Image 1 (spheres, rainbow over the protein chains, first blue to last red):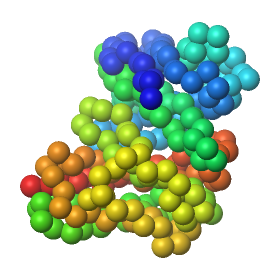
Image 2: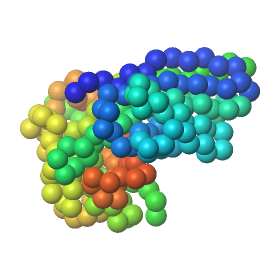
Image 3: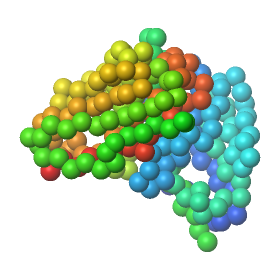
Length: 113
Length: 115
């Protein structure tokens, strides 16, 4: 299938906002996700957004969805050193009666002191 | 219990060995998944189990053999692997296949090295 696209690297100063962008492929995707992966660890679900929403806010995280352009973004306010990780955008694709989550290549977030 | 537990955390095996990866969850999830993640790459779906039945096989070579003995357990049997199969193998589960409102819950993975 087609790829979920993300920029591979983002460098942000501590305390600033981080914005990670993603372009997904399936216009019929009902759920879109942001996962976080720290070095040597598994995947942690940060947040998700349903396709009939434009925005979702959860504490320091804001997700924006532009369904027309199939563009998803994750904004992390007041970025901290603990936010250093790889962030994966992911979309849910339906395969018959089953589903599968397909991941973008991941954006490595680097925090500058 | 809101976790997916994978064992072992690390595994080194020779190309002629047979080994198994194990995954367990007690959240009542009826869909379970195996993903493979190579270094600096995104996770790639391998298998989907729904209600203990294999429902999706993403054209995975037969040297990987999944098994779902009950609703809480998922195994991945490995035989005659190649060095390029070295990767992080992630297990995940979700409430009901087809309506994963909150995404999948992932385990921490098994880091497999084939020598």
